[in-house]
Length: 309
Image (cartoon, rainbow, N blue to C red; front, side, top):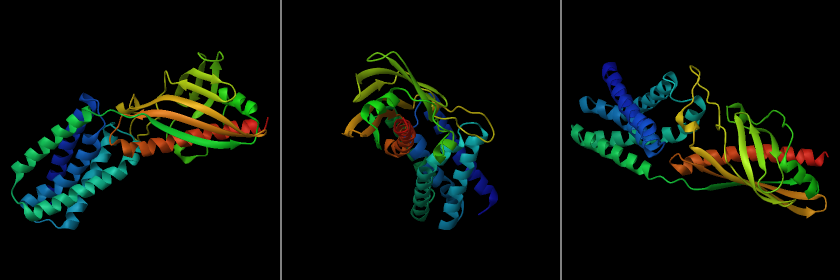
């Protein structure tokens, strides 16, 4: 395989992929099927197919070329300040799987359909148009994440530390060393329904109007305002990619206390959120994991404060 042919195939693929990505993200405002499914499929499919159009390419070289193209594309995202390391790492499993699948399709196509560039061009155009149309129809669902911890303290003491809590120690959890925002303390203005609770994170405050104040059993609140979910790390630039603004939305939350006995309380924290990034099932897995770790940090602090009172 000639280096010139390889470079040409990679450049053509990256240019097409970036064009589709820029249209989807910056013009349509969508992180969806186009970005996370169609583009990695094209990155896997196009380079070996273009090479195979002019010369023979083995399956091993085809997969190697596809993954080299993926690596260069991800490096370009960093160099051109389009994305950060953490989100690339999060996306890498689905990107790698679909790049492999695209390369597999390319290998099979090169075996059976030669000299059919017009058909491929039409196919890519139709797939791009249909995926972007499908992205625009995406309606994110409301997703609950629930975490329960047992506190060796009576309910009324636990309740006091639920409504507000003092500064939490610096985290040991590795996920919070990646730039993911984490809670530091909570304050409240007022009491009862209509009071405003502020759950302070490293990137700002969640503003939480109280909707249910059933002391000491249930505290429910909406989320009127929230900070950015993370500080993206890019080794070359300070960046703020679009997905940090509005694509993850915490909608409401609650703390539910249940007495097990006079000195033991079940403390349950629940967050309802929406993630406007597709495929939802993939990004939901990451969001659920992160929210659960945030819950554990807060509930463990409440537990320690209540038990040491």
